[in-house]
Length: 352
Ligand code: PEP
Ligand code: MN
Image 1 (cartoon, rainbow, N blue to C red):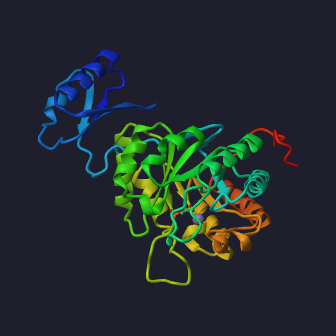
Image 2: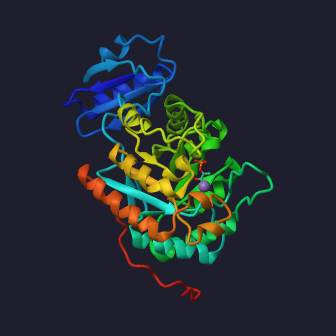
Image 3: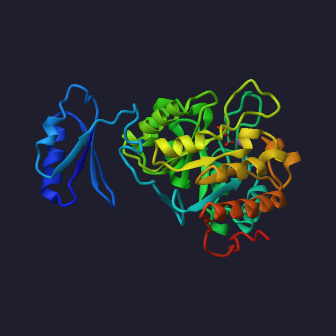
């Protein structure tokens, strides 16, 4: 249920509504927007009559949130959410490009990629260190050593880092290093992981499951939001269909659908959604034209030698060309590419 306060409601009246919501055994989520103060009463609200809140001073309108997700809904939070991280933000007028290898493989690989993507116009660096591989015999990631290397790449380039978390046991070490926790497609409904991340205050990139509906994605976001972590971005990364000419099928529809249903920023992953480097730029352009707030793209200095997802990884030159095109499309959409301030810094240990 949401309680919209009158424009001239006093702080005391807002407090009285909050007290009344708590008394009814519900949780409170306060959203103080530019236009209005909206107080969410979250929990088992169906037995609670709306009159209970309608009669309170300062209350303008009481409405039931009709969607099963509440905090994620645009009904509850009409304005777009902007998620700010170390020097970069997602969801405003700027389009953000997150780029980097599927997996961190070595110091030279991640530093070289970080410099290349920064120079091409990326505003954050991605890199997996705990990899959700289909085969237990495939490369599983460098673990904490990979996080150290990513932190070094961040120090050199100023790019914030986005890293996938696979399990809640990794949370303590991850939050020490990363700017954004990525929840992968295979973990979208790992509810224990979502709850643990909801307790943290680190930003989250939540990827859509391989066969998940838009509503299921939003319900997963709700788990994180309900824990108090409001810094959630959603990611369309392609879904399983009968089509086999690409690894997955990009659900371009999901972008405007999500923008309509939720205030959370929407990122498109053209790498996993196509699985083939040749198609990545086309789908990246389509995503920004469809209204995505950003992209997450796999880039590798030598894709043929990549330990994971080489076939879909762009070489730095192809990535730079893609960013230029995406920047032009962003402008047509009345937006700009976001940039990270600052020069590339020399490294402590003499990396040339
Ligand atoms: C990844 O980003 O490398 C990844 C494993 O993505 P997804 O969870 O979308 O498959
Ligand atoms: Mn990958």
